[in-house]
Length: 354
Image 1 (cartoon, one colour):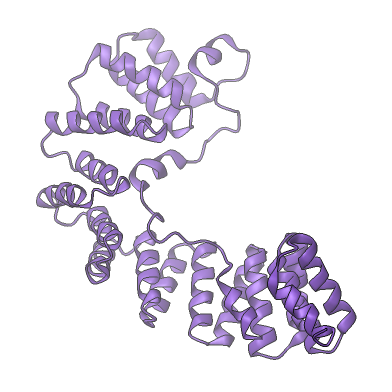
Image 2: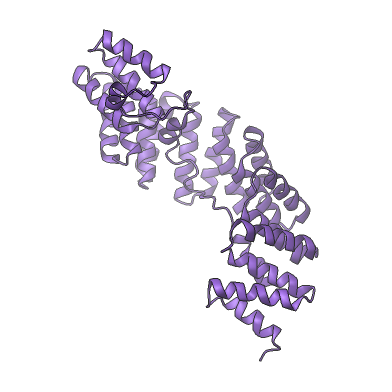
């Protein structure tokens, strides 16, 4: 049954390169909308009978009284950005630039809007203008560094990070991004060191703790446990962290702690991957076939095309000599994929090799 255990990798995907790339740009756009109404474009809001959110209504009223205020258009552009109406945000930023193109902060907002619609060249130009206007603008430097990281120009990214650190040597985001660059070029030691400096500057830095957990877990270093627990301290219901911690325990063959983490995770995220992993542990390592069947069945309920769970349940039935149900699960695998070799071999074994 060692074949089945190799499938534990079929799990929630944790992209250790991109967990936080674009964090400065993207996370800023994920703020909660204080109103439930769908945010429409600026023109439609002015002509529609739809109730306008109070925050937007207040800005519009000020603009009616001060139609040439770049600051007010900028304020409204940031509102649109926060509420994911990027077209209206860009329209307002064009008006801002027509009125006043001399403020570095305007170019930061413009770069955010360009970046989120994948116009990275425009975003880069806006950030370069920002830094030209304000040579000590750390936010602009770090966003440029992020753009270069995004396109894997790591040396250039680190150059801008170092520029920012000369101005603000305690900037946790700068150390985090430096760590992401080092991880990208597979310098794990420097990546870990930079992430550790990031959490020294900000002990609530969830993404840095998560990255430290992933990096040390890849080394099979028990420090990963504490890093993941720190991440959970900050986000108690983080699906990715509970899963990663459970998977680390599983990889280290600490079955009881793995089950404990997965059980906690299932209380607020009943996903097929966690159920599958628990089924594997109960079948192959803890020899509890009834519990294994329950979890494989739950994974199948969540995803009726999850072929590995059908195979796992078939193996479990076979282990308790329920040949009929084992055969049905192996047949289910072949109905999903007629070329699924593990099920072909298992059925051949059930038939005595004939």
